[in-house]
Every structure is written in C-alpha cells, then in structure tokens.
Picture 1 (cartoon, rainbow, N blue to C red):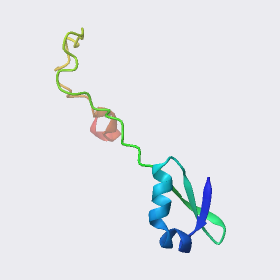
Picture 2: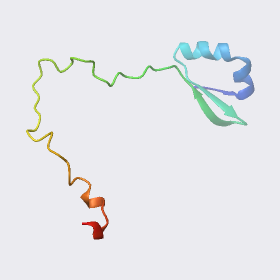
Picture 3: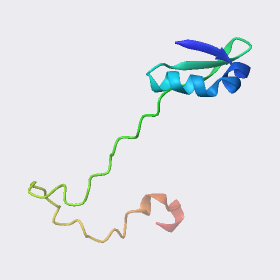
Picture 4: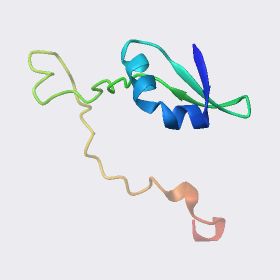
Length: 82
C-alpha cells in the first residue's frame, strides 16, 4: 500500500487513480499521519428485492394482522390518564 502526502496527491492525482484502477490502495497523509484512503469504487449491493421475487414461494400472514391497535400506545400515557 502506497502512502503519499497531500501535495503529491493533488499533483499526481491522475497517476494515483490509474494505480487504484489496477487494484492498489493509496493512503493520503498529512505530515506523515494517514488521513484518507483512496481505493477503487465498489458498487453497493442491491438489497431491495425486485417486484415479483417472492413468486412461487410460500408465505403466510397472521389472521389478526389488521386488528385495531387502539391500546398500542397506552404504555406512554401518564398514570393519571389511565
């Protein structure tokens, strides 16, 4: 892993980006202290299932899923209002 100072990183950014494209990670330092890591972009994983992805799979829903939730927040009421 190569370490460069800020001035060198600004001056040779194109060269450093080429090195990153070839798989190298670059540490950018100020006065010898690492402050940033220049590395290749990794696209985020798609964590949202596309529509229809559950087709053919078995699933269930509770019979009372739509039961009113009238007393759901009773625990948040002050004692005198109960």
